[in-house]
Length: 499
Image (cartoon, rainbow, N blue to C red; front, side, top):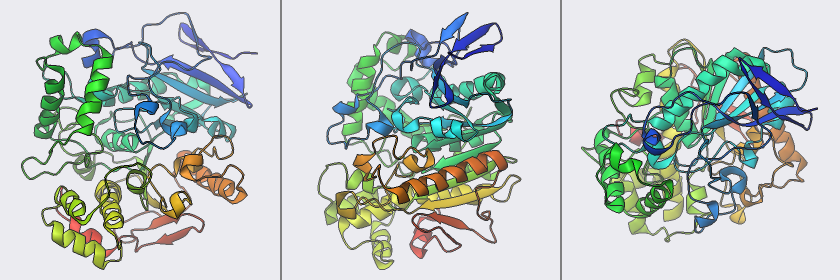
């Protein structure tokens, strides 16, 4: 029998699959079309019964097959754009027969703020629901509509969408068996950067806990940096940077322009501030003086997230996904120093420091270590340090399991923890990440990681000691689980004072 859930005067019809109820593609905000693509989200305007048996559309983006040289990561990044106007939607997995008051976990997908969706196979929430959690995945505006700085339009529209989705969850998740007072927001990559921004900017009470997987809270562009991106996009479009002009441009043209600007050189070091996104994306949150008055980590340090339990972490070899799995120019010594100069005022000292610390013996390995720390590990540590003095616990992890793919060189790359967090090994094909569906030990690791995430969402304790200034504990998660207070090597001190 198909489940029907009533929310006020409306209702949604879902399906039962693998013993859980699933509701797909529920609009949480009105369709962003025309000039509304550059406005704050408006309430969803559907009435009656909504058919939530099939996934809804996704935000405009490149198709994964158009991403030349990409490994087959469709389990995570999906096939790309599923067209349709009502793409501000969410998906819900919830146990059958629940009496309510279950912990709720709301997942924000990654994709460099330009691609991805909550409907991807790797984000299937069946295991969470089977283990007593109401799992929600969210689509939000991407690319130009979501994050381009456009005079006359509110900045951070994608973040405003995420807040609107969390407000919808607060108002309606009880009907699906969830406790609106026990919401954990979590995300990976761009979704983790979003979590960092939400810790700083979301209205109080929308979530009780937060998990940042390969993120941090140091990745917002300054207005001056955002204006450079706007100029580059406008140069491709050939129209003025106004809402009226942009309202007439089809989404296909925006997607194409983002791809072109992303593939071209663009110096975003402005006024001594380095590119916080390291060129992996041209678009992201903006310090707008409204939603974000400063870098999110600085707002968290000032107490913006006081009372929220926070779990943060990164993978040991994040940049290997980009340097090993994706074809690109050979990482030569000159390229290494050029990249280092875009991240640090003293590239010679930086490279020497990492080489001396044993973080690599080739230009590729050194760039991987430097990029991993600049983009992920150091921002993660800074977020933990910023939040630790405030009410609400802080926990930190490092995912260390090494993939055997590419002769073992892929190691603990970016996104590798996702199959374990969602406990989907054996259900989803992660072959491109070197994860065997038939490996019982990997399934066991997945069950343990998954259980830790659920324990944190349910009880506020993932199962290892808190991170504090006196005892900065980092839980290393891999074949062996080891808690350490010596996770950060001396080379990471080279990033002090660098933004």
